[in-house]
Length: 89
Image 1 (cartoon, rainbow, N blue to C red):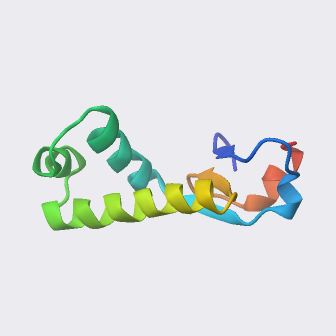
Image 2: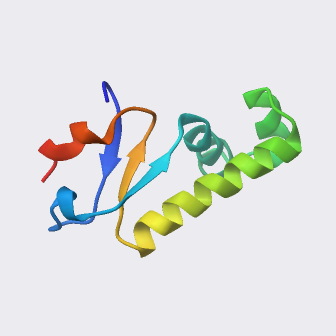
């Protein structure tokens, strides 16, 4: 997973945790909506998608992040094999 990022609960070996994936478009939707505070119509325009599509992407992103936090999963951002995460402690 070249250049990818992963976040995990402190003190838990990564090999014992389930993985939750956050795709790059989902990360971008979170950034636009939650960090930049854009309304969905403006954020959708920036991403080059329809507002309903942006809404679905954002819902998937928020669900993935919530699941990772609440169910103590490794949150993997971007695409790539999970096997490269073994070095995380």
